[in-house]
Length: 118
Image (cartoon, rainbow, N blue to C red; front, side, top):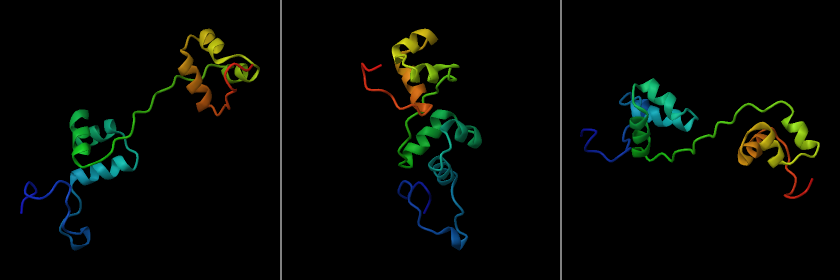
């Protein structure tokens, strides 16, 4: 039976019998599930981002949401918030959006005050 005749992602032999030590797709899935990014997998396997992503989806993998890259925390941001400045004030001071400023504070481990409270 060829690979095309079998079911998608179906594995009938065990790696212990020496038959199949894992296909590239199995390795792609394993590495992704261990936390590797699609970009890194594409480079490692000589694929385009789109082809790596398509292979993962074809293997039944649920893709992780992309991580939002945050800029470096501006000096004094956390201390200014803890001293009573609002997120909106800090966003204006540092030239960032409200949501970006909020995400940075949360990433820094700050417990946010209830809305409207100094």
